[in-house]
Image (cartoon, rainbow, N blue to C red; front, side):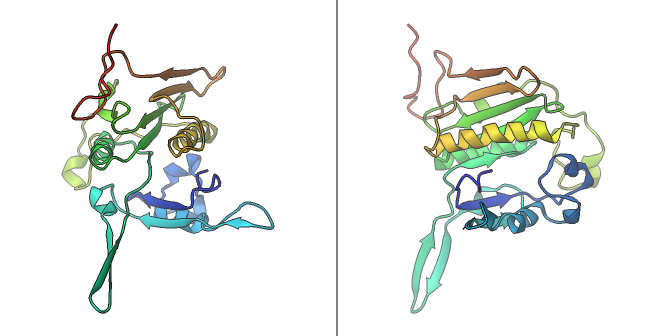
Length: 238
């Protein structure tokens, strides 16, 4: 959706490969089973054809790793004789589509430290409700400001056998592809709002993905500070 909306450069970060469980709600198909998700997506959407006469070329950078701030350090180039210049790898905005609380916290810390907006998108349960959180450092509450309800996954034996086990990763749940597409569409519109191409979303939007598809939006509460050292965003209660 972002590529077709005209975003010309996308950095894709995901350590996983495509499994059969993913096929029910993923743009990749069975031909990509066992392949790196990011590399398969990069191959699929470069270029994006918009019509028969023209195509929109998207520069994609697939990174098959977990999110880490080191991934976005400036890229240093050297030239003869002894020249050197840097290319910024800092993103304009991050689209966070992860199901791990630990990873979301890492993204939030990077966002606040580097002043990078983030739009978090996800669904509740069997994709019955979409949750879109827009974080603009210094202007909105950060991701950690929101109270997370519900229990963490029950402890298992994976931490003994899997060195990469993440105990904060939410368990897979069933959900229709059409519901996931509705949630993704909301997230893309929120991202376009951050980039200045659409109206900005409120900090928190919840939308039912079942008829009658009610939408709730939430702004900062009176007295709620944004994440900044001088607390300029502190609302005054009257």
